[in-house]
Image (cartoon, rainbow, N blue to C red; front, side, top):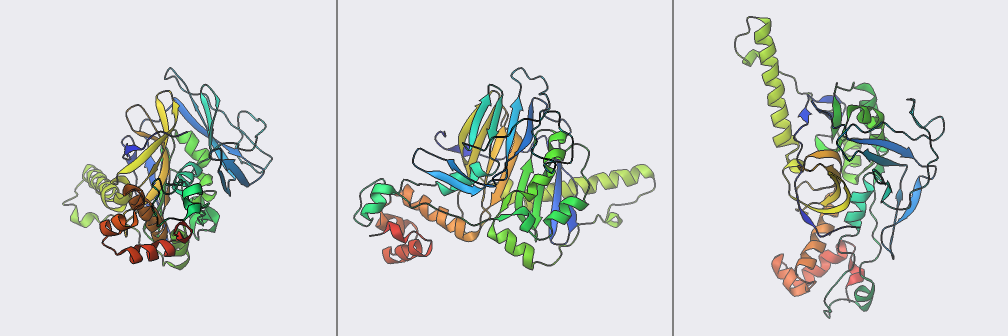
Length: 375
């Protein structure tokens, strides 16, 4: 399903950052498209069984909480894609949808339904990529590795996450704050820690999918911060330093400068750990001029690390985006696996590269939960 990893960066050109809205410890930053993408549309499918096992490969399954899926519709000639919707029961959505069809449980993480329609499981593509990281285990027969590790690779991996409705304050924040005209995305901060980014092609798609942020998964770090953090301060423009204001035009110009300053601060500082990082991307599906990919970070210890999935156009710009913030233990596990794979799973060489002794590296592997790999 995936190709070799390639270098990838998040290109949010075409999206404008609007001033943040604050509710308790949650800060929401709207993203607006002056020109929506019309030849790619997203809608939601709801599943009756919220827990499902999806085949990831012939020998492995991805088991998770999966309350819904997304369906991407696109056109091959650039004309606007028709609105399309699915529905389950009376409680699935308060908005009338143009068509109702029977929803089948997911059988794959991403499956083409027709020549111009793709069903996929939002966020789970990214999580499966993280859990399957170097799943094959040692590729070289070193004496340090157990026979079981050489035969079967890594044991099935599991990570804990929390649904959005369990993140304190998030439901109220999403309910209270209004949507901007042209809004196609949102960046969610908890205790001013970037928790998730969500982008869709069209404002109508965002209005229909805004509530799905409560169905997404969030890491232990975000849940912990939401539970224990104090309210975060709101950023308010101070026009007293904006120079003389003698007319309505001066006031408008000062407000515009403050909005631009806020957007620049957000994109370079607050979201810098997400937007300025280099990722490794695997292509999942080609959608004519669009491409669905999932990406992994460089697993930099003691820094922000996000996994995610994206649909990009033929110029590399983001049409759809969903991210998940890794905790420090999750980052350490990814970092250890990356370093081992980069040094052919040779413990002495890997330990030297990390500035450790071999027993210290073995202790780290044991602490990270990889003790079953060792002899």
